[in-house]
Structure formats: structure tokens, C-alpha cells
Image 1: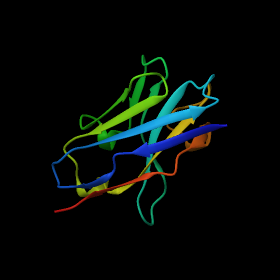
Image 2: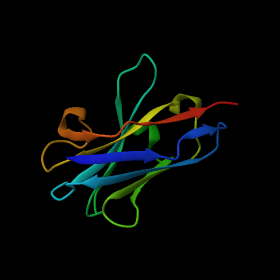
Image 3: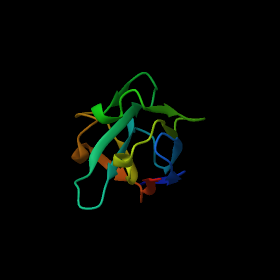
Image 4: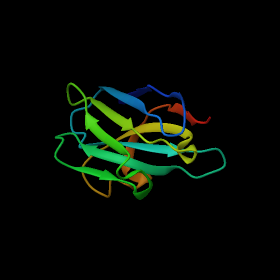
Amino acid sequence: QVYLVESGGGLALPGGSLRLTCEASGLTHGLTHLGWFRQAPGKEREFVAAISVSGDFEEYADPVKGRFRISRGYGEETVILQMNSLKSEDTATYLCAAKYRGGSVSVIRQYSYWGQGTQVTVSS
């Protein structure tokens, strides 16, 4: 079992920044990618960004390219999502997820483990 805990959500002004952190624990051996997804009320869950555990691969959804950056924190079990130039449409619950080798990093069903999520609200 792998456990994922997100932190760092909150309220930000349009144009502002927030930094989300996801910490993985448990049987993390074998995981190959950590990803961030988001889900707004009444909308489907969507891919935001993903990074390989080795740190040599990153992928971003088009709406966040150039504004968000995913990185590994200290140790393989931590992943950070730095969100800059926030927009109201970024408002959502952000969830961390972990997957094993195989399949696209942007596909929800490829991920085996999920965190509970952290709320991000962008509003003036």
C-alpha cells in the first residue's frame, strides 16, 4: 500500500502563486511516476502534471504550461507543484497520484494510488 498526503493548498489572488507538496509513504518501491490532477466542482478530474521518480521526465497539461512547474522534493517520495500566475479557472481540488511503469502519465486509470486532495481557490 502507498499513502499520499498533499499539503499547501489555500486561497490565492489572480496572478498569485501557491506551492503544493505531496509526500508518499509505504511501499513506494517500484513506483515510476508521481502526478498531479485536479477536479473542479461539477467537472471531471483532469491531468495537470507528472514527473518520473528519477526526475528526468516531466509532462504538463496545456492549460498550465509555462505557469506550473513540477519537481521532486528532497528524496524520491516527495513531489512539489509550484503554481504561478494563477487564474480563477485553476480553482479546484488538487490530488496527488502515483503509478507504476506503463501507460500514459496523463491517463487517470494508469494511477494506482491517490491522495485525498488539497483545495486551491483563486479569487479576488
